[in-house]
Image 1 (cartoon, helix red, strand yellow):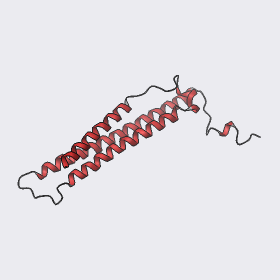
Image 2: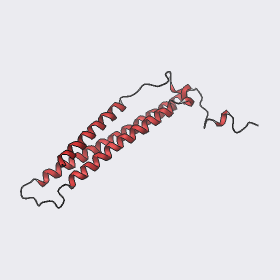
Image 3: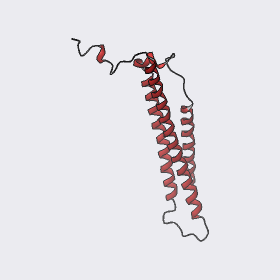
Image 4: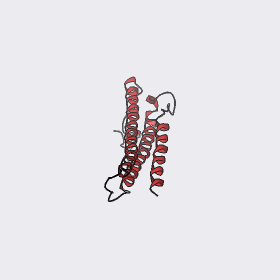
Length: 147
């Protein structure tokens, strides 16, 4: 009878170097890519919608004959909140993606992961970082316009 504290209990499951396990690993890796891309789409929508609300409602208040707004700075605050949510979504997505990559390239999966220790990187991280920059630019553009 094997001791419960042996090497078999150190891992939650057995990793076999077979083609089916390798392709299961590849499918999981691609699912991770799809997940961060959906986070990016959501963040772009939040940032864009926040900026568009600020522009639209500000222009709407400037129409001659329009009733003055009760809270003229409300569109800016709403826009800042949406832009902030978009940037926060990007930060969370990068953290989740990096955590998932570290897990997939970890020791239990080395036999099925591929040839290199740290596989090829996709441009998704560069896109996410670029979008954080765009979101911060939009945030500060609205914030400084508010002041």
